[in-house]
Figure (cartoon, rainbow, N blue to C red):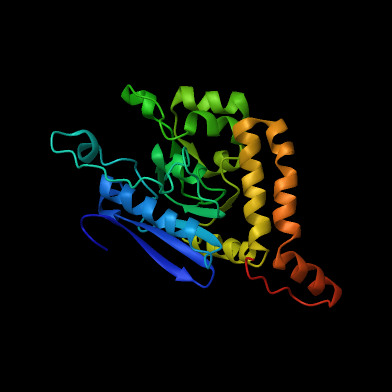
Length: 259
């Protein structure tokens, strides 16, 4: 652990674990940490040897949000996000690989937006969620305003975005914000378990599924339907497709290569 806060990474076979490490400040993000997170997500995006990402955090809390003085104070740090990198909130360039996020304790503001930029969320039972920007005179800028809608529907989204209330892991599971709730302390282990299951599947199949789903969200159903021939061609002409069929015929586990 460092006193300044950092983003660490670990590689576990095909799984790339990204770790938010600033527990002394409840994992509040500095501009430097945002830059490091973007670099880590870009590595996951570009490295064909990495098939699944897991985002987690050290300590008792996922993140309390931004380290506000470092972003907006008189001595604010300069942000140096590289052009072409993955956007940590998935608003511009989104990571093409599946991402499982493990959260615990405080999951406020950008913490929710970071997990919603991924795909699957495992929450510790002690998780507390709040999209509170409007309490501070601003608004969510990292995608909560539309991702709440896609995850939980208009009524639930407006309920929490307008009340700016704190709600539990059980409530988050009820409305679709998270997919599993586990005992506190087990969330990272469970996220890695899910990532391992995902990594057993054909990576191109998983990636184009995410790609096509994103097309629907971004451009509507017509664009998603229109995109099917392109992803069909990419998948059906791949070595992994041939291996998947052959392994089924031979009644054995498939060995995929991501090609």
